[in-house]
Image 1: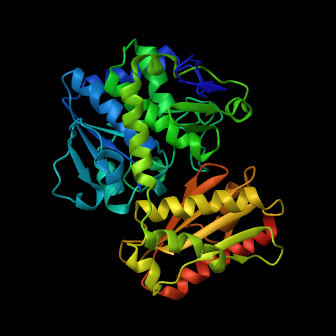
Image 2: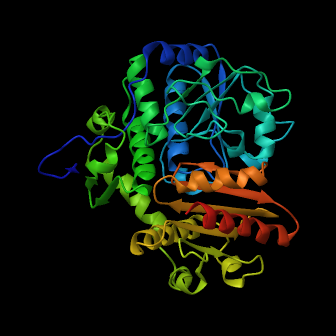
Length: 400
């Protein structure tokens, strides 16, 4: 299906359940009781979490509420937008940071997706926490799509949240789709800027799963992937109706600018095949970048372009080799003593591998989607980093 060309327009099927009116109104009323709201994005903030935050920022501002957005990295996700937002980085949050009346978490419901200092800060809000998410993390109850997270309640000194305070639709393909459904349920007519944010967040998350691609202003929707849960709704109808050609040009120029590589980055990209290793059964390909890797360090480690390069590598490897069921990359991050992992798999193998590792490493920090996940460890001992890699390769041997 092709949408948004110059000759005709079709509405794409972006998955998200219709949000029950009582659930939406409960969260909306709780937010409207606050004069100030802190909107929290997940670690290594991406387009979906940040654009969810931007859309909610705009809505709350229109209701006379003063919002603030807390992000972890992700500057490239918001610098292009002409709108102004009150933004602070997660690394700047501490015990002296002034607290808002309400905490609002977008695109995450697991404590593993908030950096320690931010998680501690969220704890200080007590029961004044609401949120939206579409991830099916192990420590989140998702037998129904409006169940509540339990992960925060497991943390010492963290009060249990009311189940209506945290809406989770694990069938949704992006958190921005849930925000769109929230606006539908409360009768909020979205503005152009809110529509731009919602479209950008939906497009980015769904393009990672191969649901949508674009060439110029034409967006192609893979109907089979868009409808894989059988409950697909046309949540983009009101969003697309708000966008004009210039809006779409701005959004796609933003994504294009993010993907332009320097000659040095191109050389790094071409050399990834030589860095690739395989598990003994040949079912998982992986790269483990060493802490003293000069090329990686000179590129700025896990900056936006290296994330794109590694993301493209995972997709290319998985689609180009029928025998592979998983592709993973391990690398030192820009943060001191922090090492990260990202894995892409066929079916739900990413979740299976992570769940298997947690049997022996219960404090493993990792999670996300069932077929693509990320994680991190903090250690001054580089041997621990390589042990971490070995846990993944061993589990891949067992699961795949």
